[in-house]
Length: 249
Image (cartoon, rainbow, N blue to C red; front, side, top):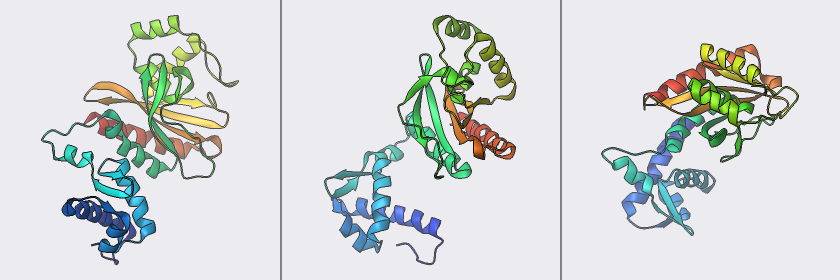
């Protein structure tokens, strides 16, 4: 059971492990009140922890009862198999915590991007990204990062097959303009959009590889009122480091 003298972050982690161990050890579905009583965890704190464990698949919920979830079996496998969403989710969460700006991981769907995983900023003024939402490649920093990662023959096909519409007065839609952006991205490794999809929002994105294969792009969406040069530099460092971590997976 968690020691009340622990720092809050350690206490929360210990309680999470206590819950998993207790539920597994009982060998039957348990109601939240039983878990709270056994482990001495306030119901208000327990509800959040249980919801998180269910969301991650480590517990399963049926009505009011909780039991061991399929995520535990996956961890026990000799060669754990994680989906791309499962692999990037903790990285997206870490990026959001470190910068406290809306963070997402996008994958390419044809000539569009789809938000695979997203974590909203805790600021009152923030940009919301809906998981599963689609948008044309040219409007988002993640989309531009993916365009820059395309081989030249595929890029030529993209320009031939798409009719790019502006979202705002500053959206870059011409082939020459986008190619100029791509040249800069290929040199720096980082893509930017400044109020190109949504007024008041600056996007910063970087393509991401997994075991050497292009799989998507990480991005930040930052209100321009908070987007200083120092913040951009910090965001670029974080995106670069995180993309490198995913490629080691």
